[in-house]
Image (cartoon, rainbow, N blue to C red; front, side, top):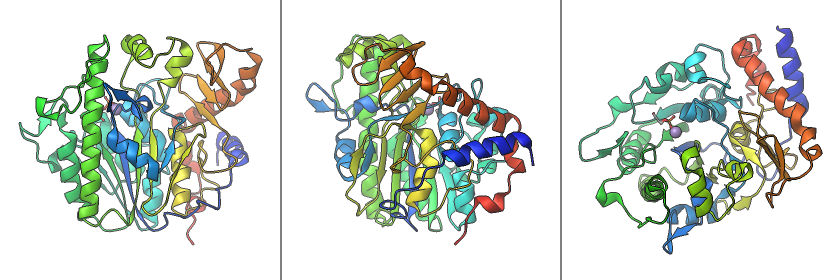
Length: 407
Ligand code: GP9
Ligand code: MN
């Protein structure tokens, strides 16, 4: 054993929160389909341009899903790969670089490995080269049994744009691959079309979004609209292929797509002042958990990608007590309502700390530092502990038998 690990384990165990019995196990035995939406921010949900919805399908879907409207990405320089890392491990990414490149040989205890040990087939599907973000190497450490990368997809001049295979075709070909997977499976699908510089073929433009002074933002609204259409077709195909009813579908945005040079234009579009508080709000990404047969509800708990691992495992009826997770089940009555960004900014149910300033969360007005100061220790501690685990490869000292609770 390692002394650092013992201290960290104590901290994590102490901060564990019980699952909510109302939700624990409601998706037991189902397939898990995780959809990582490229650069998709939460502001597009329920918003219109020229009286047209940007995300008509998602706007309907959230009415029959658990929709988290206070959910943040927590990524750093590792972008998509950071979001994958955070979601699968409930650990933070690194302050510099991408864990996928810096520590792919570490020992982890990620969701796919846990589920693989419990009899699930685990797969990641993404139509890019397997070496991008070092996924092929890292996926072994995360417990993915299969990686369907570029070589498994049929990419032509007609069905590709920008970064590669268009989302509609990606989903269509992915459903064919999913059909062949032994069930239950845990499959992660990573979209691509809504990636900077947000280009579309003319036939894929479904919305007139020439509404802001930023060309990038205008195009972004259109590529998000296209992505929404791709999701609509994807759900239809899941139903057609009999993969819908026995699955839980988890959809989240990987990170922001609008970056600093367009923050001001986005603030104007959102009719907000361009402040550090507004910029934090822009880091909200959608989280939609769709369990066919369950009614769903909108949940305003403040959380982040780090919370997904315990949240999903509890829905599947798998205990997480004793695991090294920095996140908390979003359905738990005792969720701490805290989202910590990699750079030390944070959001609570009442306050936002950014640019060394404490803001009231709802009004955006500056408030006394003391309101935020109570969180400084927790924020620093969590980020440091997570870094220690990664830099020291501490999970190799962990007794994995205790980690996976078999019934
Ligand atoms: C590349 C895709 C996009 O495979 O995941 O990566 P990003 O640039 O968003 O990190
Ligand atoms: Mn990305």
